[in-house]
Length: 348
Image (cartoon, rainbow, N blue to C red; front, side, top):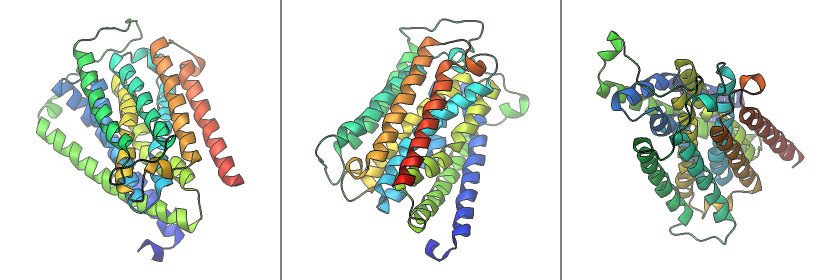
């Protein structure tokens, strides 16, 4: 059907789907913050699981859809490119939070632990690609390991919250994760209704993700664009916009652990796109079908996560523009990576 549409019509459909994802993401932030308080799971875990999964659903649908259509590089770069973009968004949120460096104020061991796990998860695709291709039913063993490690990390994160063996030093700028008092109107809304609204918004974001995938695939073919470029800088950024909005919204609400946890947790969840994409891609291992440009974004995401992790540990109170040095460095790395990718694609 899309083959019969004009290019402006396809671009309009792409833009409309992005707006739907964006609007749904804005609404979800408040819901997750309330659910974190009511269930007692904490902002960091809620950000990693609920907010991370919800805002990443559109991206997962994109990876599955384009992998089924045979676009291996697009499926891979959509996942990894989203991780790099979302890490950059956290630096943007750091600039928005004017009281202190966000990584200092949002001290939480769960987020540090999740960042370490993210580095591990991002390393696995590179290890897979460096070895001869081995698959079972066209699925690489790494695709089976990623979800297992992800679930183990969630269990470990909850145990860390309940019985921490380390504690961050509290300062005047530290924002603790404490449940907020609900007003009378909000209190009347049942937890079941909150969950139902949350799930409905997730479905809407998933449908919008499918539209983004189909229109992006059509544009890739029609305009002879690089799959890696479209995946890392178009579909990935488009489906990651909710993370930008929800992170800034969480910062403005004072839910700092939720903001940081939503990004790091969303990034960890995005590695599951690789598993989903590898399962959907029927011509062999997704990791071996991806190209050097895709691996470039994997290394970039690892580098950005490492810088973020060092900032979470160092907890600098203040830096350039009231950001931490890690926020400024993350933005510089992402800007350089985008420039290199665009230049390389243009030269090719």
